[in-house]
Picture 1 (tube, rainbow, N blue to C red):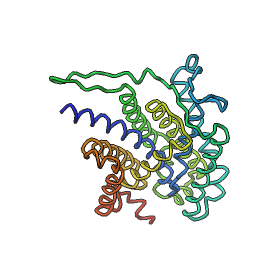
Picture 2: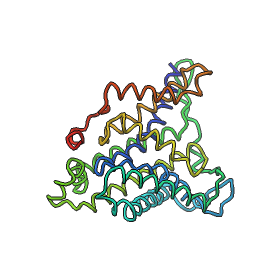
Picture 3: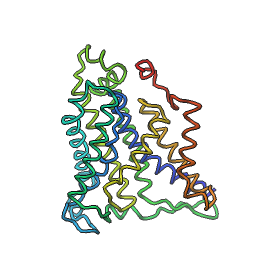
Picture 4: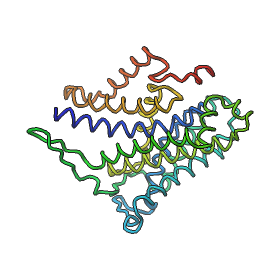
Length: 309
């Protein structure tokens, strides 16, 4: 039971990261049917925004001594939102009337540009980053004859995901712009005919996606303590798979897919024999293939998307 609870908490923590990253992808896909493959590189950009280009290989953050954590979170979210909107204004908006494959190729190009910008500014060496080291302390939960040890950073990650999902749900259902975004996701052209300002809605979607990338970067760096210019790429891959499994265009499906993928990855790592653990990802993707063969539309079917297809 103790091992199961330990793995369950690990699964919830990892699934939270995947769910937040998948939300950033799902927001844009729901409106533009754009899979933004530069989202992972945007996460990397937000992480590197924590340090100066001239910083050494091992980095501490003197700004934390004077900048409270809420302000730091807001600043990194702003960096992500501005970077995402810059990509929209310079690349995606001029190509908005082109085909979906063209937009997807453009997102790959943006991702490579961001990687090379980070390479030019920071170099190719990974960095060690001391971010909120106090979150690494263990919380001990007595359970029968044993105890469950939970790193505080995992609790923060899970609670943050719950808070973000709740806030995003309230925004989409209780605010004017949220309702406009939902209308655009249902039928973008009809929403434009009815007075919804398309550029404003799309810009807001990009800003929210970038802000989510900033949150993911902070949570990831606080857990791993490492920076690299490709740190967001694996997160992007898993988030995309979570979005597909959960149901393309469904934010609920993106969250469910993220948690499901995190649970499968953690429990396979715990249950597989040691000789097979290096092949964990192959087993994870095999399960994904089986899921899609049984339910091609994903766990949560999006009727509006199916009608548009």
